[in-house]
Length: 224
Image 1 (cartoon, rainbow, N blue to C red):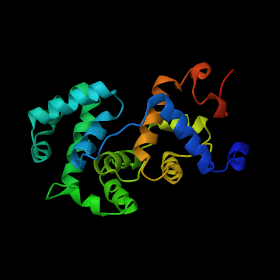
Image 2: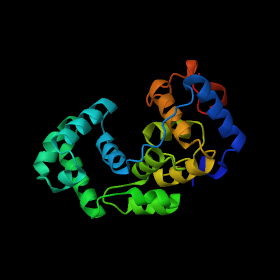
Image 3: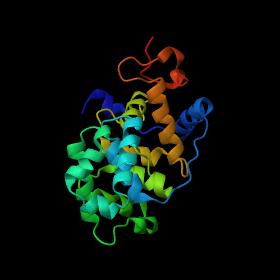
């Protein structure tokens, strides 16, 4: 264990609330009522991997136009799915993964029963599907059902690590557990979206814009 990891302790709730409030001042309070379409969210999240939002959305639109039901996507030749989602990148991998997930769900092809489960049980159900990890599961639970789960993507991971919300060198599984514990009830979507926005707009991976950062005074990793 590194010295930094040995001295790290989970942030106090008031510090997390202060970060939330500062981000809220910058970016507002995002509102997205649960859409209750978990399969749509699951496929969309798979398509989002290693690409940007625009390419993801183009791939999703092409897929749903070519194959209007998830049963059709599951049963189509993989080459048809691959061609439809090509704009989203690594289409060979994603097409095979999407079909493997849909086949693993079985009949009926539905994830609606997740809504009646606890967060922990729903996480386990989703993560048992081929290639589905905690981030993908959290996207489904948060955006489809409004459940208390926080997706930790590269932006949330980077911003959270610089703010020392996470133990140094923590893996993504641990980051998800920590983020879940830190996030006030009912604010999972807000904290995820605003941390993501901050990572995209200010807290860049290589050269963060610390000089104009709204979180500068509370960031242990600020530069200059």
